[in-house]
Length: 353
Image 1 (cartoon, rainbow, N blue to C red):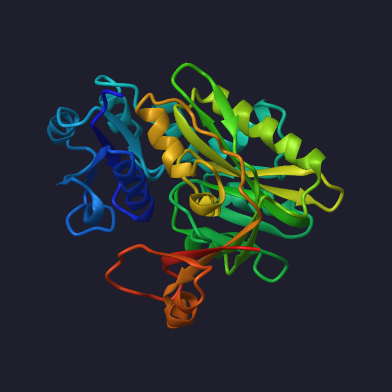
Image 2 (cartoon, rainbow, N blue to C red):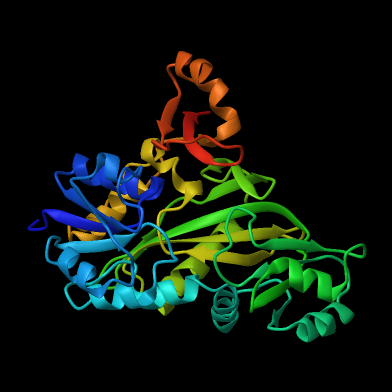
């Protein structure tokens, strides 16, 4: 392995855990972000550059200090990834970012690959929304096409709030997607890795429980999901990885319908919250796998070591820390965030069932 320093675009907890995994493998991490200084990722990294993703000179200077690059979140401008790709194969790649940055493009890609999606309508005006609502049967979710996460940028639509003018004004966007409500019995996520030569494989899937739009708990390997659904999900996430020419790792969230159908929700071409359990629970974690791929080490074994539970720790959960640490079976991870707020992810805990 000739690579000594990887670059990470983004400064949050995912960048932090990538940097930790890299350090454990003898690889340094250099963080690049508009808020890099004093950030969770910079706290554990070899170096940090604070600059805008649109700053071409800063990006080129950054590229000259690293040997490979990845991103901890999908909303890095694709132009920045294309610039860095002039220096080395950038992870996850400009096309993967371009698709993942827009919910409408995600749905259209899934549909083109024969992956079932919820019924949806593109919305670009109050008139579009009014027309879509007129044909709506049952509940739906109105979402911004960009920048929404953890339940943000979403409005549940039902008989009591069907006024198009009010909904469009409340969403504060130029483009949205109206998705039919999915009657599901479970939520599941799949994770694929793919290297620069097109070799790929998957991690065991995770079964997820959300509260107030935020992931609360992941159970893995998914205990209540049929082999048929798991096979369909793995096929789907691999097809997506191939279609976007992925270089790195990519997660796909999906619903399991009452009739055991797999229904696509969204993708994220980066480490995913629902796979933090892999740090303790897999031979090779999602973070180490990403580092292995972008440094050219080759993929590691992603087999699960047992049955695990991962719980997110939000700001309002920090009072539990003493009791969590008191049980030596718990692996507690804190993200180094300066301010705890309700609903803010401050860490997670993983334990074996």
